Image: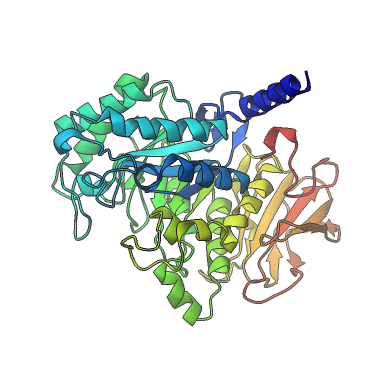
Length: 466
């Protein structure tokens, strides 16, 4: 009997963790689950997961990331690193004769396994049908270039049909390539998206975006914003520590029609660009953390993380892309991999679906980049959050919040810890000084209406527990 009870409890626990199909919120700014719960996207870019990892490695990776609070895993079916001709660990390549109209079911049995294991753990797979070098290699990439408008649609149909019933898939068209001017690239991607939707229940049953290279401001919105298949916009803001990534989010946030937006590929931990940052006195974790809080406070509905060794599933003896510092398993616990969950928990500890960017709260905002202070708040006035990258003082306009007096908290993005600040009187110009100052001393000030009955920042109710 005891064994039966234990097995029943384990089954119920697994069932409760199963991922629900995601959809766009009513205000077109966020993602929610089928039962209406807000969903904060916390992604990890594991581009080579489906190509290079066997099932034991898949289990290890997914269980580890789930334990760290991640809920979305980016992975590519036709992978970048010779994904067409170098077989997976079970000896299978994805296409017969590299023909998109004849996928190899044996290869996709492993993809099936990964998607199923992710669902058991409450994880979503942001699934790229192919990396962009299979459309054009540009000045790097193995290719070969195999897609055109006709076979892209056929491949999309095959993928959509195979995974029509998998409710933990988010479709990501593209793959680190921007459509070329005066080419058919845009139409090829549209054909693939249409093919998926045709067999997976239509655009209202699929959740899709496009993964670009870095652009001046618009990412996916530069080509596809008004397309019916593009449910939300995605950016790649580049692997640099000193760029105002929030400007990309601000750009798309203001577009019509309204669509959610996020940064799907920022500065990677252990990326070669990080080595230069260290030489300039930067802490890589500080740089990545700053980028993520900037983006979310500017209006993003979530944020993706990446690590240079993990995306390529690097092992000693395996040909590297820009020499990683360590094998991928050793890289799973780098500092930011264990800090990003604090951002997710912070945002979900306050009303999420009514949150708006509110840069007007920062009086005389600091110059862009390292010292840029950013603010977000509840549109109904119950709270505000202000992010201080280096702990510098600022004057804030708190007049949009409810009540004459306001409760305050200080939240540490490095640890997720929080402590109460002094109550303050609401005003159009309130001077605020964080607990400490200097590089690496970033803080979030949370200002609550006194009678809001809100939990301490970062503390979640049962509906949002990891």
